[in-house]
Image (cartoon, rainbow, N blue to C red; front, side, top):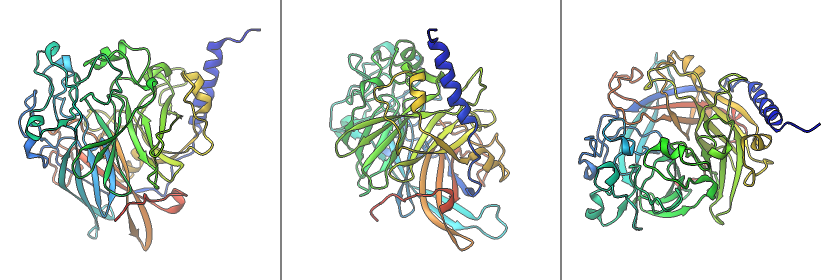
Length: 470
């Protein structure tokens, strides 16, 4: 009897989904030790970008800064905003995006023992110390703005500083090239990591997707890695929904390379696609891709990552991957989340961090399609159930940020005489500064939260801190 390909596909997917349902509980030893944040309504430290953007919002609004977060050592973290303030409706032809200049922020995070009677053992104090703009000496494509009734998307600061800044405006591309063209000015940064010598940062993006290296001190682009053509779309559009409809392959618009890890030895980057590629089933599919980049040779390998089914077997629904951080040279933590919670006016239900291991995993660079990827998906085990852990500390699911997107290991702490490691989790608030966040001690508008979790050796065997130069 001939095999029914559709039945065979469903069988493999059912097996994969059943395996995920049977996952054990997260480690009980991982717990919240501190939480605080920065007000989104303040200005950042780049006064030269203060002029209003196309939508009237100040170009130096601090806004969201938790799309990515990286530890740089000595209590210093780097925080990454995404493409800028597009929550204000002004021009649908560019998805309300603006010529906001892409940047990263430097933040000093101080963890101190809490006063007696405090609900958490540590008090966190974040202080913004620097803002660095991202640019290149290469001439970039900014679009002409004609179809949107706008001027081109080039920031005025280009002429002032004789350079070319990356921006969030969605029409800043060359329509004749693939979306991974490194001379397109549009960039939607989503994750950030620091080189071991502390001199460079690596940034992944959703528009390309791109993976770029920048000089940490100046923000100048110093390197780029072009991903395989399968990750690119061929029909580019300033409107995300049109870009999805007009392509049969490549990344889904606004769901490109969301996460980025660097191995402790500093030799490899591992990027995580937020959702499956269009040819792999897009947002309705169970397997997204991880990309491992050898920074010395440029060699790229791909792996399949299985998303958790948070729907039903008959009507599956999948979360998105928001970040990935290296445990050691072969194991990683991956952040999966729904889009529900504070800032969305709804209730958070699924915010999970899983551990995976690429040792022995089969590369899938030559494999295409949801059913074909499923047998090669890496195994994963729960590490942290964020909703349950925050709930155990009295934080309601309606107060948990909808977009917990940044993961970073931080400095060690001592609790009851025992050394513990820390994991920092940051949120992306989409540049909405007017929502009052009750988690902040002052009750002020403060959607930029940092949650600090502590864990011991037995919670994450094999953990190695990144070899950062002091």
